[in-house]
Image 1 (cartoon, rainbow, N blue to C red):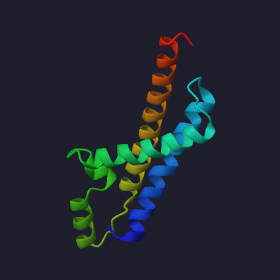
Image 2: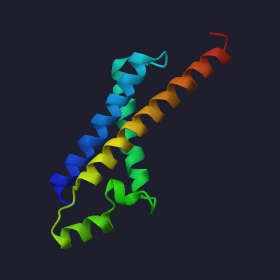
Image 3: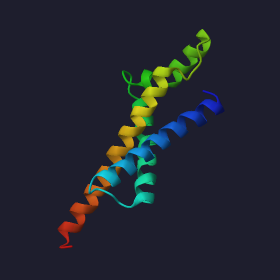
Image 4: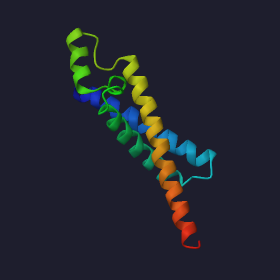
Length: 115
């Protein structure tokens, strides 16, 4: 993947993850504050997409390096619609999971201390 493709992928991952974190904070009681929700969601989006790229059955949907080289060799480009959708879904899922996990851990930790 070239520099531009990598920047596009990271942007999609981060934006989708941040959107999921913000939505979770706004629509549920698991909010940590808008800035923290967005930052946590973006981090989760990038992390889960990277993790998904390491799984053989899932990697083709988020753009593993080997499939990117194959796609370039065939002339169809790296960022196919399937890869972009897969990256977006993984980013949303990662942002949602990480934000919810941290919010729940804080809530449980605070309740365990009597506050």
